[in-house]
Amino acid sequence: MSTGGALRDAMSRFPTGVSIVTTRDSAGVLHGTTANALTSVSLDPPLILICLAHTSRTLAALRTSGAFGVNLLAADAEHVARGFARSGAIEAWDGVEHVPGPSGSPLFAGAHAAIECEVEDVHPAGDHDIVLGRVVHVAIEENAGDALLWFRSAFGSAGDPRVPTEIT
Image 1 (tube, rainbow, N blue to C red):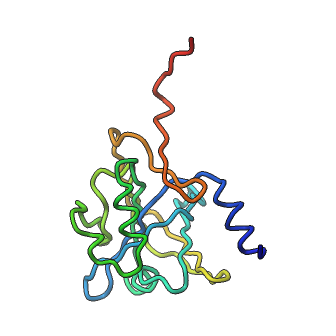
Image 2: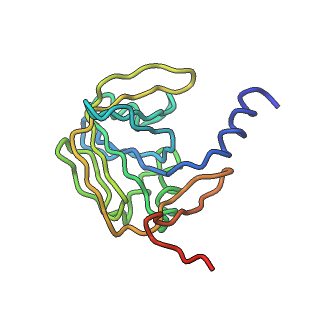
């Protein structure tokens, strides 16, 4: 197995949340892609980063729009994650309730959280670009249910750790 293949296999064993990165291009056309490569960078100023493939249409659109949304999915949205994982699948938007955030990026109803960012910087890194976003708006849904996870190349879920469990 190549080092890249081994890295992919190793990273598949690190459970991550699942998000949809969204934006609009200069013509107002919606773009989105499933992503699990994201992290909080700083609270002051509020910054996050996402990583998108150089070939991503969403990356191209957010470069021109200067803004993007990150929608953290609930477990019942696996079908949404699968739809946005297909490159250029405009039908992925069918039935996905969303509203434009302050800068116009689509934010999903029913997501655990929707974070809207202005593009702060973009750095090339191998076959991806690291996009640093300055957070300008956050919406949190307290009743979204379990979180959608990606682990060992499959979807799963995790419950709310604040819910007490009885040990017998």
